[in-house]
Amino acid sequence: MERRPITTVDVVLLTLQTGQLAVGLAPRTTDPFKGRSALPGGYLHVDRDQDALQAARRVLQEKTGIKAPYLEQLYTFAGASRDPRGWSVSISYYALVPLSTLEPENAAAMTFVPVDEIGQLPFDHSSIIDTAVRRLRDKSAYSALPCYLLPSRFTLAELQATYEQVMGEKLDKSSFRRKLSELDFLEAVRGEVRSGAHRPAQLYRMRKAKNLAVFDKTM
Amino acid sequence: MERRPITTVDVVLLTLQTGQLAVGLAPRTTDPFKGRSALPGGYLHVDRDQDALQAARRVLQEKTGIKAPYLEQLYTFAGASRDPRGWSVSISYYALVPLSTLEPENAAAMTFVPVDEIGQLPFDHSSIIDTAVRRLRDKSAYSALPCYLLPSRFTLAELQATYEQVMGEKLDKSSFRRKLSELDFLEAVRGEVRSGAHRPAQLYRMRKAKNLAVFDKTM
DNA sequence: GTAATAGTGTCTCTCAGACAGTATGTC
DNA sequence: GACATACTGTCTGAGAGACACTATTAC
Image 1 (cartoon, protein in one colour):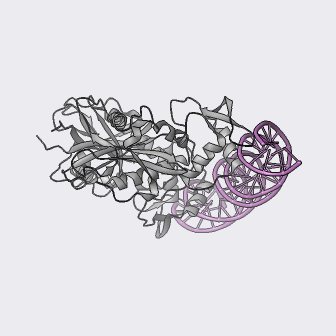
Image 2: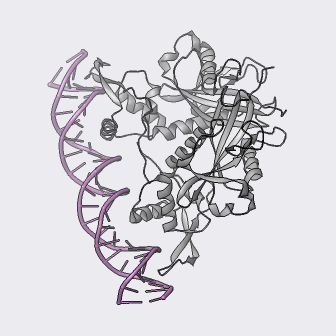
Image 3: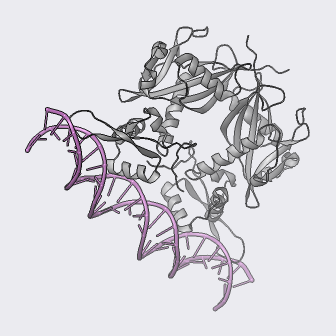
């Protein structure tokens, strides 16, 4: 029988922290690079995991307590030299969560590092993060992805700020709202938000759709 | 030590055949589903493959003789029940080739089946193919991908027909050419092509660019 | 009233689709 | 000459960016 590579699942946990896109890192508890900060990850358990997505969910739940974030397969990094233990396969996922769901003690052990201040990380975790950030930026330009970085209710101003932070460019308020209403993946919620001395804003939530809203691109 | 899943690499070989997008299938030579048509694939060889991409290249070369096609990682299908041998991971790739590079005896053992006439296949190979076709269609709308389905020299009419066949819709000649010249990833080649009683067409080839030309999408 | 943010209306310029026109070959 | 396909020019309508305007709250 053929020799089999090590198979792991790693998760890039992305969130917005003080207006910056940040990644969740956790100190490694086991031996290669023990103690160093790295992406939350773990072995695939052929006896407990039904498939790779469930493995990713389990890893995330174990390390952060988060139950149902947006979670999507990112890429598979595989090779002879990315892990000192030998030939390894990392099926990597990325998750999007609002910072507010992370408050409790679950996330106590985690650090959140802005994506452009990440130094050297064990394995090829830096490239994995790069890939995740690129994927998020790409998809944000034509999908509702950034909504998952916000709590379930939000104002249009908050949503616009989120898009701007993710994509790194200013958007025009009027055009942004026009596009949103055409795309029609939001619905208004009764209720208000107030901050200071100004008019309150309408709250919105994502319309329940089985699929992620994706806008069209053209040739 | 943890039990490790089986790890394989499968390749979705796509080409255009008589105006239709078709997938290359080969009869399986080993036991699960021996003799049945399936995607070309094989075990990852930890002693011979440096990484997953090289494994995919090796598999494709061994089964079809093709050396340097467009080859990109597609998705990783992994789970307990997709393979009768047990928990398995398939790192899948998709390749684009012009039919003309396939003529020799290499491809003798292969069958090409139009993508919408594929019946039941072993494992989850049907879903893998669906995923590949969806990926190609998506990316074709905003990239130069379809070029890889043509020989290195082609006319603009051939290129337009290729885009149309891949995306399944008619394009306007004038708009198509305007877009191409703005995007500027083609260059004219001295030489002509002739067919019947009509004006000969200019031949073009892709400009050498390290990256795949990708057009922009907007929010 | 002022300040501050929420939300809308409108103008203009660009660009993609539609389609007609011209060019250059074979017969 | 006719015919077939290659290639180009122009008109028009939809949509995005820019920006100004109105609305509603706290003080």
